[in-house]
Image 1 (cartoon, rainbow over the protein chains, first blue to last red):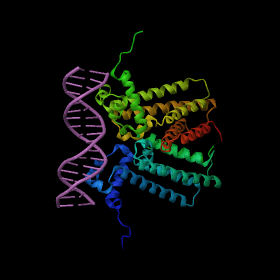
Image 2 (spheres, helix red, strand yellow):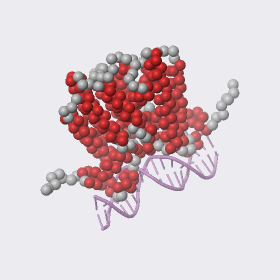
Image 3 (cartoon, rainbow over the protein chains, first blue to last red):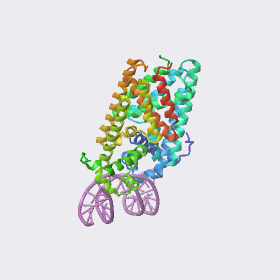
Image 4 (spheres, rainbow over the protein chains, first blue to last red):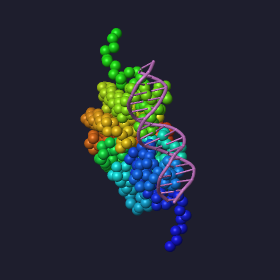
Length: 199
Length: 199
DNA sequence: GTCTATAACGAGATAGAC
DNA sequence: GTCTATCTCGTTATAGAC
């Protein structure tokens, strides 16, 4: 068995471990709220070694978003491929957010959206792309559900998609100070009921 | 005319100017994303002078929340006192969020909710109190509207209030990377339509 | 790939003069 | 109240040995 992929500095096991730790730190404390020292301490290597894998914090940040967006896109693709009613897909979509909050984390790009003005330029573009892709997928799901009659909503699918994303991101945000998942659970249930057409 | 109030350090014109600048910085960059140096540069005094008014950054942060929450509570009280249908009050409530975002700002406590785990303890409690008070007021408004028949919604007023807060905070959050107010405008319009009982 | 060592800078904070 | 001066520590980042 041959390793086909050429290992680039950002594609080693250590790099992955760095990304894992940094990802959690950003989702919990924000991009301005963690440092290379935090990662080094947790991983048990020096700060200097981190710079071998990710020369600057901005590049680390960009890699974080890229990987997160790819994983998110994979999850959406997996949901989209299921042969189930659109209402079930919407429920699965909500479950992604629930799973993130269950680990006491904010959505990575939700966190970065808050800090947006403090981010280095390369990271900014990646954040916008995340929300764009999410919006396109969600709008298409809503259209599909509307055509099939399994989803009901007023206005355009664009408007409805924005409402769903805002509700879920906001519910995660507001849940954080309370240290539990009650607000998100309530909001997600209400969303599903609303779009399932319960008067 | 005599000044009745005894001026405490945190109650002078300079202190107010500091709070104004710091408030905008937190709402745009986050609490971890600004420093005493930023305020000093903008106000034209030294960092040392800032420490006379607010000995530590944590105390400055706590004062920011206290003042913001008081102003927010005043606005809610003013809305509550109007002799108009509950639907109009909900619209006025949404207008508060619109006005904040129009200044390219995130809700102060929404920003701090994201950064919650990175905040000093005294600030954490104040953030929770903000959301608690907001929730109590909003739930009462929904109950009032439901009784009067001017607001229609499924589930409890508690659940509906959480949904509204989450939708508006999340809409502000998602709007930020796009640099405009379109998402919030769309979400607010949709909320008002939904709670006004449009099928 | 990881280390030690250090540079270069910015952070929050204090002492004491004016 | 504001200043200069300074402290201490944390931050990102680099050089060069192993």
